[in-house]
Length: 408
Image (cartoon, rainbow, N blue to C red):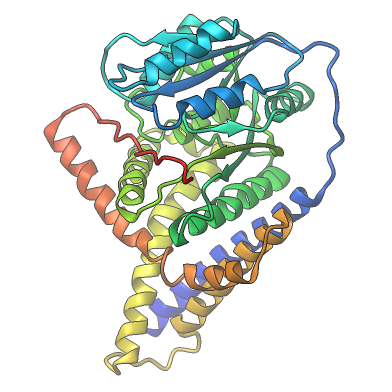
């Protein structure tokens, strides 16, 4: 028993050390001032916006697109995937009003979902770069230009990745926790990996990719529910770099109730489980820089969840006096250290964003005991649906996230 506990403790101390280093380097990168470097020539860009029944948010999204400041050729494609609401009418209005906005009706096809729609958008556009925004996004006017400048001035770069902020973060406790999660684990960790290893990971939105790199990668995998993570591995395998640009911000809507959030995150879980299976079957994804990407997948979806299960079980059994050990390094110590590092990551990201309030400190304190613990439930749910999907031999179904009307 003691040997097993010591082994577990060493493993998780190493894991905590790694994430601590990422946090520190991410904070350093976020704090650095990056000079604005105008280009002599700005390449052409196509913004692709996949949309299916997005009438609740699409007008604000397209309005934000009209405010984008970009010195080069810019075309915006609203890719209407058989919407049954007013999405098409709204898109047609903007297309008739603005010359560079195009309403594209995507032909029916399978497998259904974002990847197939994006691949169609790639096929009908002709720009040097492709930029992806989700249908609920409102990028800041300078975001695209910053992404292009980073891609063009970073050696070996084939694109760039921006920062995704939560536009409805103050709606309720859930949206605030999501916003904190994004600011810390999406950006601080991203910035840390870029600073340490020159590694960037695509997010589902606010990303720029060169057309040449996309075509060499074969586009998006239409069977991947986590199309961003999947394409990241292929692009990295091909030797491309994806610099992280924190100053290139977009604002998006996040789920406002637990039911919608669980459905969204279950889809993400299924997508990453598909990707884990894919990487384990193809050793090339553990070579070179992809070793870090693929290993992190295993650490997060197997290692972290295993630790949560073991530490929570240990805590409960110890609380009721059902399990005792004279091990020198009890799991309760690791459990406390995990919470402390988690809390520091959340608070540090808020300090950098200059948005921290006393209420945010309280939320950050509680997140490890509440929000983070749902990870186990989500993984179990994702495993169940992924096994069910494989047994049925059906194509994956894209479960679109429900949008909410903006509060008055």
